[in-house]
Image (cartoon, rainbow, N blue to C red; front, top):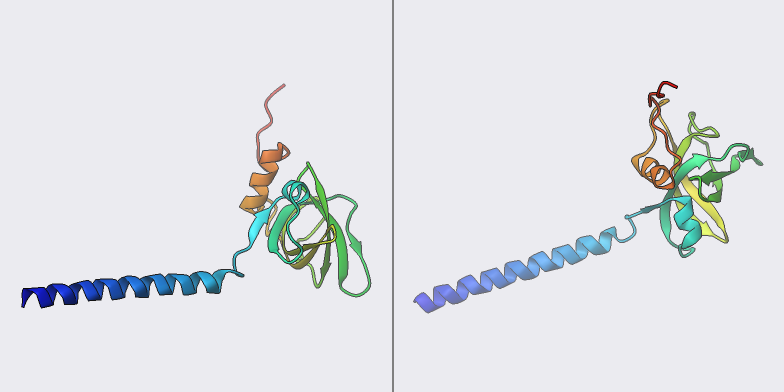
Amino acid sequence: MKGLKKKRRIQIIVLAFVALAGSTALIGYAMRDGINFFRAPAQVMADPPSSGEVFRIGGLVAEGSLVRGQGEQITFSVTDGAATVPVTYTGVLPDLFAEGQGMVGTGRYVNGVFEASEILAKHDENYMPKEVIDALKAQGVYEAPNAEVPPS
């Protein structure tokens, strides 16, 4: 009788492990296209992603680069201080989108141009996405918005 209980317990443990492994595999398969990696313009230029890969790019909108085309077509450049990537976007830009301000775009890098499907901009005068701040700090061009200036 003890051998039957032990065998049943082992079967339940093995079945639970198989179910857990199967559900983990299904979750990973479902999320494979839902994960968008963040890249700074310098990273995009140093190691360009494949044309089909969806990722996020962030930085500052380069001064003098914003050009509005026909209809809702917009082109501009995003920079992190080390590199600049041209961006095209078709759609309505956020109200707070402007040159010299932080932005994050989601899309694909095709033939040297980032084709954005979504553009996010800052939401107040001090906000910038964490990924953009980290990328700008790595390049040495980020200054905190309310940084005190040392007396001279």
